[in-house]
Amino acid sequence: MADFLKEYTMLAEIGKGGYATVYKVRHDRLGYVRAIRVLNETIVNEQSDTYEKFLDECRLLLRLGNGNHPNIVHIYQPKLLENKALVEMDFVDGFDITHYLERQRYFLPIDEVLRMVTQVSSALAYCHEDI
Image: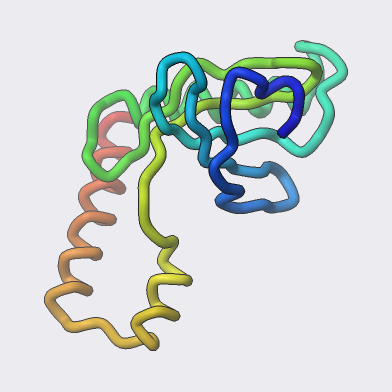
């Protein structure tokens, strides 16, 4: 694992995109499990446009996630370590919707569809009320 994440043990790479990579980690001293999102781009300094954009996104997520809605993940203090921008967030065990649907062979019972739609709608409504 990258040197700047030396206080964690990487348990898995959860996903990787053009903008960031997300890892499932365990904090070595405290033992908690979280996800850490690390920007793929090297950050030259705290005034860079990329880092400012990252912080703006974190501010928005802190406003939303820290309102304690059960369907919005909490994030924690963003950091810049060894020219890498990262943020800790709650680890949510499970599958993203694409992989979940693949596992279900693209068929879900109507009650499960309604449950998912209700949860997503509730989170969206919360976002619009809060912001």
